[in-house]
Amino acid sequence: MARARKLLLISPQATFFGRNPQHQRFKRESREFQFFDYTWTGFATGLVIVGSLTPPGWDLHYIDENIEPVDFDEDADLVALTGMTAQADRMYEIAAQFRARGVPVVAGGLHANLLPFEVARHVDSVCVGEAEALWPQVIHDFTHDGLKPMYRQTTRADLSVVPRPAYELAQQRYYPSIWVETSRGCPHSCRFCAATIRYRDKLGYKTVDQVIREVEYVQERWDNPYVLFSDDNFVVDRNRTRELLSRLVPLGIKWSGQSDVSFYKDPEILDLMHESGCMTMLIGFESVSTETLDGIDERNWKFRNLSKYVEAAKTIQDHGVGVYGAFTLGLDTDTKDSFEATAQFVKENYLAGIQVSCCTPFPGTPLRDDMERENRILPDKSWSYYTVFDAVYQPKHMTPEELEEGALSVYRSFYNREFSLRKTRHFKSIYRNLVKKKVEREQALATTGRSMV
Image (tube, rainbow, N blue to C red):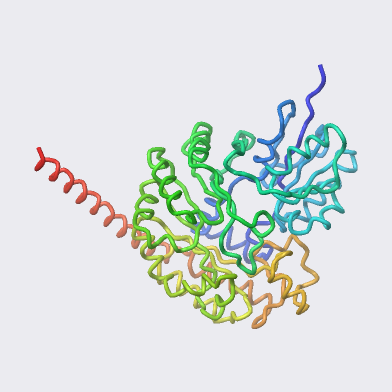
């Protein structure tokens, strides 16, 4: 009987929270920060999608190098690598070791989509586009005619008919959270964002039935899973969001997602988020400065909505959903005063959590083009520094070192024992009000019911 072909699916190691020793020390010592950092840790979604697209007859081995080492002596017929820009250098090292043994290597993921010709110098084949549109052809060619050097997507993947990701590949490793994708794409084209510009120019959606089946599948395989919806913008289609949230309510999960602030105006969605188990929503505020937000995205949407940030954060959190604020510091209008302004905003509004990033000129973005033209990219910073917590360019109004120190100062101001206790008291007050309103609503319904008998 012929041996089954073996495919290794590898996510390379990366340095999380930056390479600055002060950042790493803070990460080790701050229990408050560790809780939020821990919650947003999950598996490499692209690899479990590739696993679901691989036909029967293949032996699949998923390897997350952040959890376990790669065994370079493992028998393999084909290696599939994925990675963000911060993982690119390690991706090349892994590819070199397997290719030296004669094992062909295919690379996909964000960095491969941003710089396919660079990646092509290190691997046998590069996938540029969505896995659903490319991987079946890759496997066919490997099996029959031989791999092509590059595969480019010509049509968008129809997410309403894609197979369920092979979550079982990651089941044997411990992950605090499980990524589930319900849509792909974002309506905002921020100048610094590389997450969606290379995959599709139009949002794509899975059906609500698909999503519910995936969540139920995850529930069968993990005890009390914490679900992270990986959508770049979870609440774009309001009608679909309401239907999905209504269907999530009886499942009894705890979950988080990502969005802009616009949903704060929809009380039905806010109520359904709380009822369906939403604990936090990561919201890309980016900045609290009108100067900085002016021109940050194509439609200037975030600039026009800055005046609503305070009301939005309060409204969302008053409905029992924590706001996890994401901020990008070091853009061209930012000064050293921006750090204190950001710290003041996040504390005055009692955000549930924060992610503060150093502005990072990823390849393929308009921001990168600007900085290359102005010769501001730091030449001594390899891809492994593109963590969004390391400064890899020359800011206009501070040094790179001051940018890293300033970003860390916001974390220190927010993630400390004293402020955490104040924040806990704040949220306890919110939850008491929510419980009181629920009791009053139930009493009103019961009274109404009796009067109708």
